[in-house]
Length: 342
Ligand code: PAZ
Image (cartoon, rainbow, N blue to C red; front, top):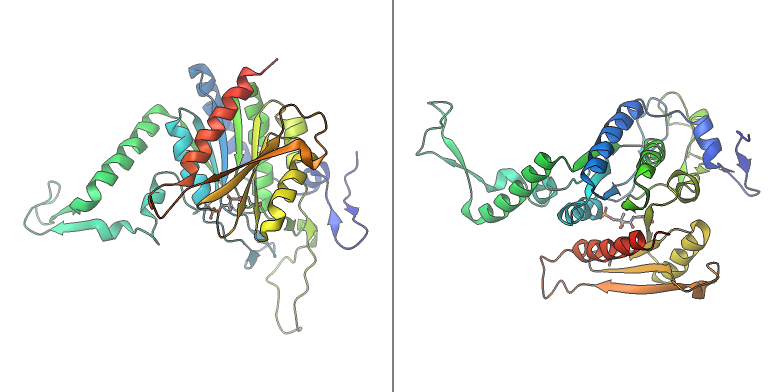
């Protein structure tokens, strides 16, 4: 068994997934998380529900063992949190694996930056609270009530039904260990599980063995850090950990010319079912689904893939969320995947 990383011939090191997990330590919460996932999946199996794993938000790359500094990325977790709600609405049970403190289903509607909840509460000075004779009641601004009632009642119903399990990660290492463990557990569902990998995962990391123990000191001029490549985790996910799951990955680009070639490249490399391509600045109203052509005999040729663009018009309907249509399309494709089981 190879447990040492390989030099890539230029600079840095390429870790296989096997080497990665043999050399990087698991997060301390892993065992506990796996126990919660097992219990959740057993219940969904008994109830005959399909399960989707939604990954969401960005990963950090710590630069020190006693971490003061880390690299991060832009993702707020909007795509993941919004999609999770639509999957729940479509009858799926959802494992929502997200970056700690990123947006979550339901509470996302009251994000502290875009819609802070204190702004729509009012103090009714004329009334007395039922619990304390001296303090006045808090009321909800009438214009906010309809949405709050809708969000709150769905949130409560999901909690009563026990169809949402939330797990969190911070670093890219937490993410990789958790993704492996959850997907291995989910494989008991066969074709009834869907993977919706919307998290923005770092492509580079600093192995524990190369990290400074203490805070990196300034005063020695510029800082040079050589990072290694994060292993391509979709490869073992598709080929080993969950062979029958319906796997959807996301590809983010800023150069529109790269979107389709990169999506096709991912499908050719990993052999999964769908790549959803999105441009950083257009992602709220336009995405492209890329998937193997059903009749294709050669999945390694670019012509072996078909693209299908999904667009919404935010000028016409500013409240429309593109995730509603993304999820509707995937639910259809997943049903086909289950039907076509041999
Ligand atoms: O979290 P968000 O809604 O701000 O952004 C979503 C997204 C762009 C991170 C997601 O749609 C995506 O493309 N994720 C994969 C990124 C990548 O590794 O290419």
